[in-house]
Image (cartoon, rainbow, N blue to C red; front, top):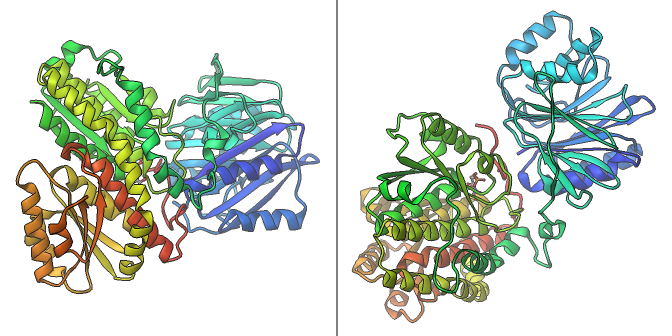
Length: 612
Ligand code: F6R
C-alpha cells in the first residue's frame, strides 16, 4: 500500500527520497510525489503512475532541496491522479503532509475546516491533516504541539510525515496504527514506513509506537506522546540488509524469492531443531501447562497467510486432540466467535501489518485470549502485540505475490504443531523423529522442483490463454489448490478457482470443457485419498477438461490421464504442500511471464494491506 520516506540532513533530499520510494514500490501504488524545502518555501512535485514519470518531472524541473518528504499512494479516497497524490498542503503552502492509512472522520473534519475558510484541492481524506496543523500554527501554537494536537483529532489509522517551510532543520513523523520508523544515519536522519526504504543509509532505527510523534532533526530525534510528554526510546540496530532487497541476478524478485525457498526452510529447521531432535520454539509466557490444557485454537490470517492457516488447522488436528478453526481476519473481527483465556489465537502474517489480522488479534486479546503469531517482519505491529512470536526469517519479501513467506509459514506451523503435540504427550518420540526426518527432506525436494522450471514454463505457455482455470486438491493439498489458484489470478490475471476436489461434483464440474485447464494435485498419499483424486481426474478427463497434474515422480498412472504432468519428488503427504505449491508458483509465474505482465507489481495489488 502507500509508502512514506523523509530525509533531514545537510544534503539534497531528492535522491534519498527517490531511492526510498523505489525500495517501497513493491508495496503497490498508483501515484507518487515529493515535497522539499527550497529557500524558505516548499516545492512539490507529484504525478499519477509510476515513479519513472515522477523522476522525469523532477529532472525537468531541476528540483533539489532539503529537508524533504516523499510518498507512493495506493488510492483509497479519490481516484489515482496528480491532484490526489501526496504530499498535500495547507492553504498557504507552508506545510506538506504525506500519509498512510485512513482518516475515518475526515468528512466531519473537512466540513468544519471548510466552514472555517480552509481551501481544499483534493478528494483525499489526507488533506484534512495539513489544515488541522495549519489552524493551530496560525494561533501561534508551537509546531511540535500543533502536530500533536492535530493527531489527537484524527480517528482511524495513520502514519504521517510532515515538512514545514518555516523550519529548515526538522521533519515530523507521527504514528497511530500504521507502521513508521525513524532512521539514524551518518548523512542525516530519516523517516520511513518500512525500514527497507532507508536501509542503505541508517545504522539504527526507532520504531514509533501508536500515539507517538517524533521531531527529527539532523542531530537528534525527540519522541513525545499525544499528551506532550517526552518518551525515551533506545534506537535498535537495523537488521534488514539492503542487498536482501536486490534481485541477485534474477529477472524478478518473485523468481528470486521462489528460488530462496529451500534455503529459507533449511535454515528454519536448523534454527528450531537441534542435533538431538529437540524442537525449540519460544512460547513466551505460554507455558507447557497452558499448552497441555489447551482445547481450542483459532487461526486468523488473510489471503495466502490464511491458506497457510488452513494447513496449520489440518496438521494440528492430525497430531493433537485440539479443536482448531481457521478464519479470515476480515470475517473473524465481525463475527461472534466463542473463546476464552484457554483458547489460543494464532495469527499468521508475512508483514505483521495487515489491518484485518491486527483487528482480529486486538479483539481476541481484549477478551483475554493469548496470541501466538507467525510473522516474517521483525518488530512489526503484530509481533509487538503478540504474547509470543515465531519469526519465519524468510528475509524481505518484495514480490507482491507471496511465495517464500507462504512455505515458511507452512514449515513454522508444522514445527509448532509437532512441538505442541509433543508437550501434550500426543506424539511418541519415534513418530516425532520420523516426522522430523521427513521434514528435513523437504528443502532438497523443493530444489528438485526448481530444476524442472523450464518444463513448467512450457506447460504454462500452453495453457495461459484460456479465460479460466480450476485447481483441485484434497486434505493437506486443499489449501495448496486455493493458493495455486490465488497465485495464478494475482499475477497472470487468468481467472482461477481453487476447490476441494470432492466438491467438484457439487458445482464446478459444470465449467469443465476442452477450454478449461484443470490443475490436479495428485501426489501419493499413505491411504486411499490418492485413488479418490484419480477418480476426480477421470471425471475431468471424461468431460474433455485439459488436465495438468502435479504427481509423484515415477507415477505412470497419472501420466496416462493428464495432458501434462509436473513431477515432484516423493515426500510425506503431511509435508507435500511445501513442495507442491512451488510447482504451482512456477506455473503461475510463467503464465504471467507469457502474458507479459509486470510480475513483481501486479495491477491493483498492494503488498501489505494496512487498511480495512
Ligand atoms: C498473496 C498475498 C496476500 C497476503 C495477504 C496477507 O500473494 O500476498 O494474499 O498473503 O494480504 O498479508 P500478510 O501475510 O502480510 O498478513
